[in-house]
Length: 451
Image (cartoon, rainbow, N blue to C red):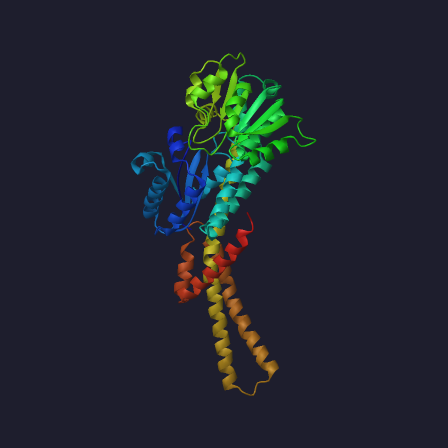
């Protein structure tokens, strides 16, 4: 295993750099294709969220891999390599596994314990599978990361250590007031109809707002979200959809605005917001969850306007509570990293063991054929008994060393046992490689249906 991750996040880079480095969906696909075209990488996938961009790859050379992945991130993000490099972090092998498992559990999130990252990890794996850039290593890694994240949320109180980004943002807007009390009766405008915007709309509805207007560039998506909010047995909120051109008018009526779109420019400018608040008495609360930002940072300076964005959320969430739950999750991550490493090391030697047993079977077949030539008078029963006896002898001789070598290979530093086994028995490298290719093809077919 030669897993390498190169990336940047809210922990390593300022919001201004993260905004500029944000990757559109088509850019992510091109980045993965170029990663596999690069010499050091055999597999690759990208985890891109509003506050992190990470490129995962299976590489055969560490230093060359770091240089190539860093260059690719710079090229596709549009941020110069010299400017980007100080904000990049690098994790290799077990440290890379530990990093992804921590991310999956919400330990590395802006709001500790948030669960939305699991969906984003699932999307990252699906993209790698769709483009055939994720092979056995990354399939295994990301599938296990999803399981580890779910385990952390089901076995610990990490959910209490930090709410979703939406809930946390609304709490910041409400300041010292209970969110349900603060939101009750307010009119809300939700800009965007993706997963984060849908979560925001649902959270606002549960908090007691009286009306939700959904605006989106594709009106049909906004209408679908509004329909879900209006379903019988729901929260009772009145919801309807509008086109993006109506946002200016809706802004004058709204008490709270949540925006999370994929736009590359501002959705609400300072001028838009100043116009909307002219002559009104009620304050306007703005929550910007987009990266790059949707709402002009100049809104901070407009009287009667309170803006909470990714940058202010990062500052407010610096002192995460409930250390006991965090420590418990860290323990789970450490255990799972050790188990994953052992499984990968054991799997690495399996093709060699299979090749050894295949060679032994060929030797048995050859010797039985030679014996038949020297003893042509054997009947079928005698021939079968001799064949079975020879096979049992070979199986017994190979059983203990093959079981033991798998155990040894699963331990730290056990990667060299496969090489030793190949050398001792003079195994054909092509035979071992053929077994590996067959395993990889089987795993690829199986894993494509698991996301």
